[in-house]
Length: 370
Image 1 (cartoon, rainbow, N blue to C red):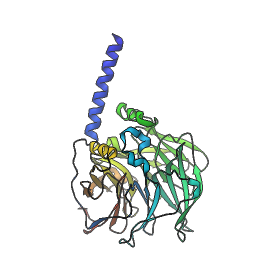
Image 2 (cartoon, helix red, strand yellow):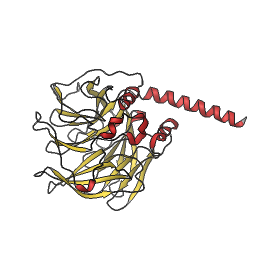
Image 3 (cartoon, rainbow, N blue to C red):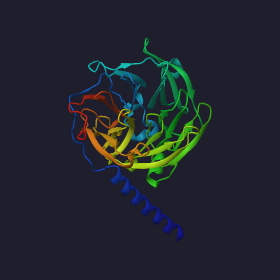
Image 4 (spheres, rainbow, N blue to C red):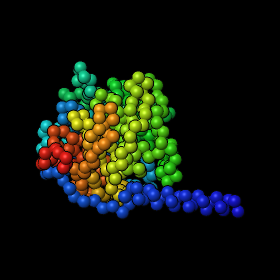
């Protein structure tokens, strides 16, 4: 009798949790078209543009070919397993040009599955290092790559692997070989969804100082990371809760202290910070149902949205007040399941989990209406 009662209570909890998640994740939402100006797809990207890292000179690096089957192979379109991992380069200064694949180091091997990325640039030499989450066959890794502009190639500086890397989704660089990494789950495979359903706080943010790693935050539903200009604040997206968490960062020991959580009204994915205004930009998923259908069949379209959060508070607490905007929306035809965005001089580049990328000019002036 006790076991039956316990089972009934567990079932009620699971149903309640699933209902809450369905509402939070926009199961019933539809996409709408709202482009800020002329938009086009960026060739030759066809197999995803999951994350975008932007250099100060307008050069953007795009991760492509993420093999999402690692999450739950039976629920994914089998064509995804044939995706080839690549890093593309796109120049905002030559917006009519196609993206170009960057030559990868031989050490990465034939199986390369890039996910979240971030860029670190030496303030004196200008050296560019790209930090790339790579889901290797045998383990999770953060690849630190040095970019050579003349040869359009990367060389491997360091491959960081650690037991605390359980399921790394994104990385944010804080130095030439130091970073934060966000684990989006502890359990691997199809069972990982139980973490979300049960609300288990097993996600972590790991700080790596160049030699050692430690957990600096725990919770549920973690996804993407970003950092403010000067490194004072760290941003963490939580898609299930449709929010971005803002932390104050101790630059000595890497510890984080939660100060704000901002509700954005959609499943926020990768976060981009405009270092001129401090605005938080992100690619968003409007409907978990349509996104799931898109993953199961990449010919099925999922809506896309880009959101912008403009801070209006004081310097020590900039997001104590803020304004929320939606500069871009699409029904899935131009870009399906938007996951990332980058802004450069009134132009935006929009990435997707498994689909194409889009470049848009902002026809209107940046203002409170955009």
